Image (cartoon, rainbow, N blue to C red; front, side, top):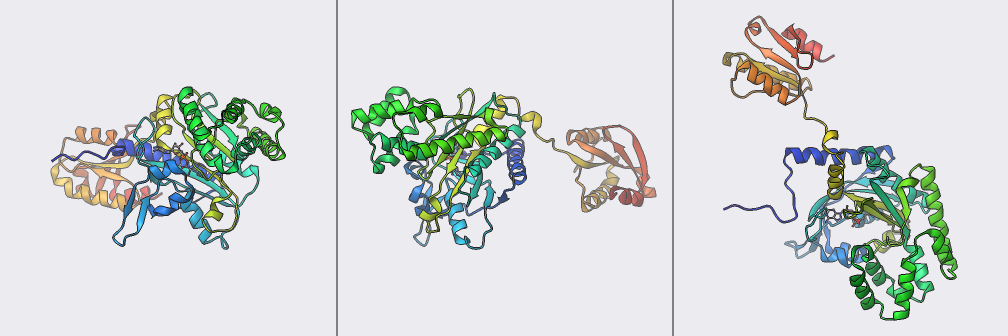
Length: 429
Ligand code: HAM
């Protein structure tokens, strides 16, 4: 009986694993150089944790289970609630600001499509305890630091930025009830993803007042921060968040990443916990789903039973990123080659034991080494050595009877005869 892999999951053969490791190693390297420390949590949590404030969309996509003790659990679809729980647990002993990163494996029961799977990896960067837009600028910088590191330019990607606080104030200004805001956000989040007619229908279901609907549409057609400032008579609250956005763009310019960033009122975010600056990263051609997104979630820690502590961060998945890098020809040329320090070849099967002994000693000395399990012509073994990108090939032959071996430099092609002892002294230096 053949059992296929589960829909929306991936098998990572060694060549796929090389891609996954390269992406994740890059995420970790850039996180560390931006001053973040790594954390992780469990793969499953109590189901209710994701029902508190992640929003309907995520709840509908949960892989949930009941354990033998009757507890309702869910595989994590994101790590932000776990982060909030972990920080709350040790809030008094953690030095601030908390700058943490994580690379969790996540599961969402989405309809699998280009760039969206049911299991994926997501790079998370979060700053907790900083009530300043500088923290938002820092997390955006960190995302771009990685994306630039792998070769993406301002012609390839764009960070679209807005503010939920500003949107809330503007919506309230045009007469929308505070209690309706969460529903309106999830509709507005779909505006750029739906055809115009379909969007109007969904909006009409949520907002029955035609007059208010027209105002919402007018608001959503604003293209710049200046246009927002000039929009009707905006309230003090809206003005404050417009000023905050302006300051954010100033900081992004100072950081040298202004050309990657653009104001876009359509950015609302699907998750329910965002409270302030929000952003999403897209390919410039706008052909793929979002590479990543994030923003400020100042109320989440409090909602999870902790003190009111501001927080901001983002998540970038490995799927769309991999597709974009491949499309731009940036993936395979950057992957590190599989390499080997030593390939140990033998000229005759009588030297197999010696080969095993020498290989074991080379490995024990801290170097990578491989050998052929079956006797084969020396030429074939040298081919194996070069296929595995061995730097050097040790050849065990008749010389080993006098405790000597031949070492061939694979790049230069020259060979040297070594006393066995001297070989092991020399490789340690
Ligand atoms: P999110 O927008 O739900 O945010 O996910 C961020 C990114 O994860 C997406 O843009 C996408 O690259 C990737 N992603 C999401 N779902 C899938 C999927 N089914 N298949 C492949 N990739 C996917 C969050 O998860 C927030 N918790 C991020 C955050 C951290 N906000 C603040 N801190």
